[in-house]
Length: 269
Image (cartoon, rainbow, N blue to C red):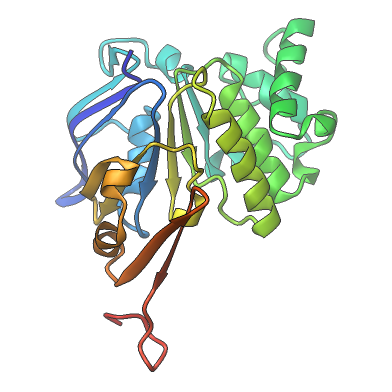
């Protein structure tokens, strides 16, 4: 079953188009990364894909169900989502285990529902999967940034989702925290039994080696989309970010840099 199908999707506010038109089809076992500078429409795309922002035009289908013809609350429950906004919504004193366990009811707390030993075991298994099982009894607000993000990854995968949407999960992390998170994410994404992924980032260095497809956005429009080896190169990345970029791949990981003028400024500035 196709995980996500966007057809001629656009979002506009008044007379300003912030995204689109975009066509994007994510199939099982595909792992997509979305790249683009600030203001390129990445956050809006996340909101549409996570069924939080209804598009101005176009069709959105998630797991074979068209948005507008079903109970949106049930459909949202099939999407695993991480974002900085979710961190802000979580109570700092909530136990880490509850952060993961509560996703079963699309909740932010466990107060309003009943959970059993099986629920606790399943949540702990996901925490172990991302290397934070030892923090299950800790208060979420006491964790380091990298630990919090890995807890949110565990939450995103905990409810047997059909699609996982990761909105800049490495933002604000130091080198160690970023690499640990990417290592865990890559291991999970490399497993063909896990759901397809849509990962948002600014940096090619943050693309896990197991990712298969890329979508490049600039000013709301698609620069390139398709299999990562076919669409991600120096030319498309330069067009995406509006500067002259050298792109290379070593050991499965990408890196990029721009040429600098003698005055130290990037081309075009």
